Image 1 (cartoon, one colour):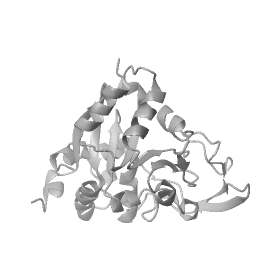
Image 2 (spheres, helix red, strand yellow):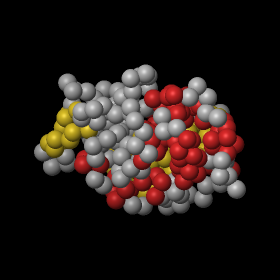
Image 3 (spheres, rainbow, N blue to C red):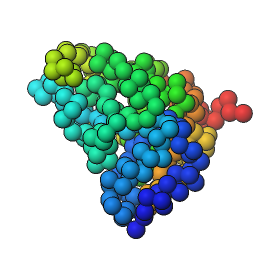
Image 4 (cartoon, rainbow, N blue to C red):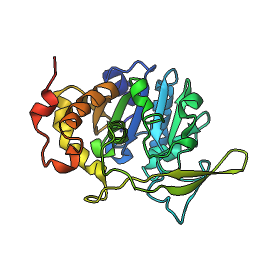
Length: 264
């Protein structure tokens, strides 16, 4: 059974000093038994990164729809696991106002980082929270999950204007604001005519990201994890999108010469 100190040591072994901007996608089950359970995992992360900027996705894309269209950030549960749902309720944590792809943030500049999400019109807008991971040169830690849950790659595809990724027309959502008023928010949904979940195709670059050192293998508890560098992930993904912008769908396998090109 792992203790808080064990988990902090694992973070230290990954090279973190606690001042980083870090986005964490997670599977609590993959971590194994922790003394105190999921709440202690949250304690660990918040204590370790209190001088940095800790980010977790609090997505609601699974339940939000044309019929169920009012997003209340104070009460709407996340559809991406137990850790985000616990995290967003903690004191000092703020949640962005994106109706389908919100995030929760804690630490220095948290409120500033999430500002303006009620005005974006796509799931992972380059000028929004997901695109800012690149500006921040953030780290992305995938705890017990793969790139199929790496939302930042969606944002990279938006930056490259990859076709067949979004609905032609937006869905008109309503966002409940802190003063009780409701703001209309037209937002396009993820869509592709060939697959229900585009992100499942991102694991085609699992080994490619390792080979280019855009990602490395690490461990947190029992979990086999992937630690990504947002800037390097953007650069490597850009190489393959330069060859074929729709390669994640059109290519059964990504040719290695595409992502090894231009490496020093």
